[in-house]
Image (tube, rainbow, N blue to C red; front, top):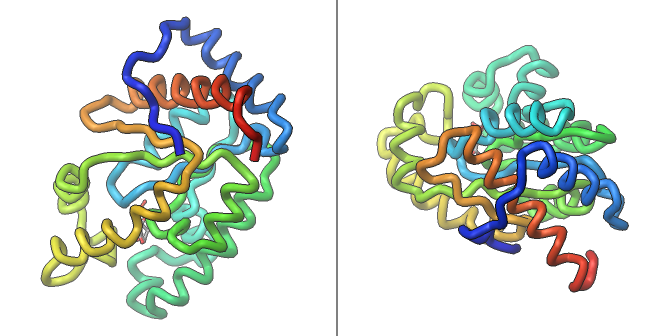
Length: 210
Ligand code: S3P
């Protein structure tokens, strides 16, 4: 995984978008215009994904929203009625459906790629981007709305939170690129993300393509 450097070259937004689209389309891997956002709950995958899709002129899908649409149930209800294992099975099927889209930005639920088979599928089908943020900042954000997030709707949310965070890092760190969005507004984060992608593709020209 390559970290996005802080001192990326300046380039206008229009030519940045054009360059990123063209680099993705030309890449021999066939991942094409398929982008997959991953990262811990609260890092802003959905907000960022929607903005990124808009910026690149691509459709946007959110695995959590797709799960709710397919099952006609809210995520907390799926957890409380059928348990996490069942949720993960539905999530896997929905992820596969989303990855079948030829051109798309996908925001995945925080646990969707914390399974090597799902992660491998996403890494093969699209460009996986880890939205990095310090855990303390993430915790602050998710504790605003614990009822929407069954995993932390428990008596000791901090313990569960930090334990899951540690367990998940090795998966998130397999992403193609990692973008540190701490302290950035969504539009700034999209800009950093696009510049990071461009730098990634420019470096790829000199390294083995996988
Ligand atoms: C989960 C994160 C949630 C949702 C579900 C499980 C997780 O999505 O998929 O509550 O395992 O981290 P967000 O990452 O969008 O909060």
